[in-house]
Length: 276
Image 1 (cartoon, one colour):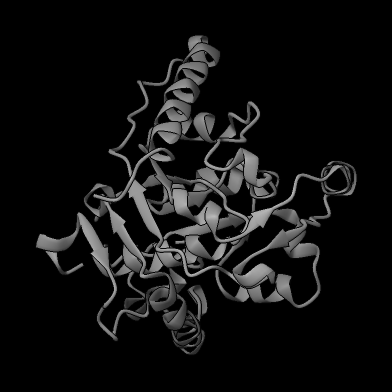
Image 2 (tube, rainbow, N blue to C red):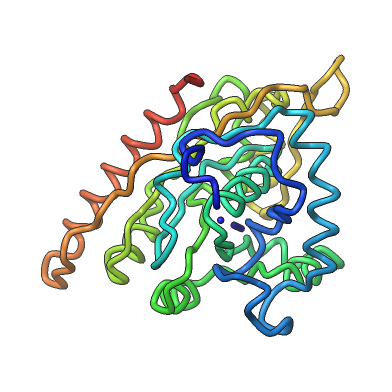
């Protein structure tokens, strides 16, 4: 999931962007300059261009921009933690801006449901998304990559509108353990307005289906009552890095709890922000 030459504009980048950015792969690829790596190691240039063309109208439709891109490191590993909206594609829009700002493409760890879905799973693999596991995440960070995760996953994306701009991590601390053991910064990212793209009805059916079968079935409405995204202006906010303490195996549980509390507080703050 998801990396500029514009040093003076890194703190707030929006449309229009350079047509040469090809940044829509940001959520889908490994952190590296694709042109300097063998094609077999990364998403193919043809697929990159296809994603870029497909997402360009979406960027214009939502007048997308990012505040705080200076916090994305130009070198070294980092764990990028994003709030998960129902629309989901706002994360790809963030990736475009991040790629154009830093030249880096983080890799994403995807929900198991993606890889169990015919066609979608194959596309995800070709696009650079990898099945989520602590081992895979640790290896990528150890190799110096940017890693993109969403602790709330699909369950967070299914929040009804009356829970908009809220964190639904439910105690999921795996990302904190990963950052602590790998000794990499956590960078929190949120797009509060993404929760306004659709109205999501509160539904016991939605909750039951996902909790029991991991099947997402939201009841939504958008523009003019249809399931069409509203033309909401989308702004992503990026927090300064949250640096984990030196790892102490004897105190690991306490360190993870403290990191989780800090990350939760920061994410909640991002979700209440308004564009500058």
